[in-house]
Length: 193
Image (cartoon, rainbow, N blue to C red):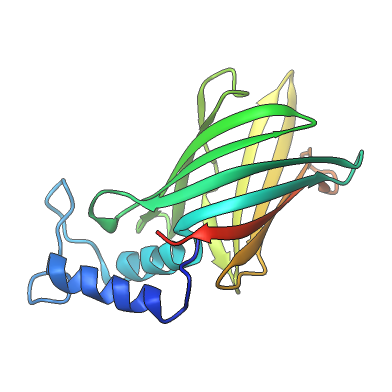
């Protein structure tokens, strides 16, 4: 669920792309359905793209049993700049994991909607039930599901953003119980978008 080499470069690139695509011109860009993207959707997507777009090296640690792993993650801008697409691959104590995620701003829900697919999901893909939101400087996703008659909660927090790094922490528990940290991913920029 990518930053650029310098804070200056991304805004310049983003403005250049927007001018080229007509986003700063008189007519706002329209989505595939013909509706105009709202200024808030553009702002929310720009913030998400600025934070994550690019290629990252990952170091994984599982605090419960001291496990470790490594991987890569690439975030790229989706069609029309209206989504962000994540390609993930890691190997470690939990085996090899390959995944694909897509996030977009949902104006009516007031949050990012997220679909996540990976090789460990028996159903193939899951829609993150409560989506994702910025909470201060952190991006937080919240998912709930039922398995074997029990309800579970997963909270994923992207934090400590710099130009060239961020931390991704996953917490999980049976619903109603205190969340336990299950995975920490430290991302270091390989290259910008």
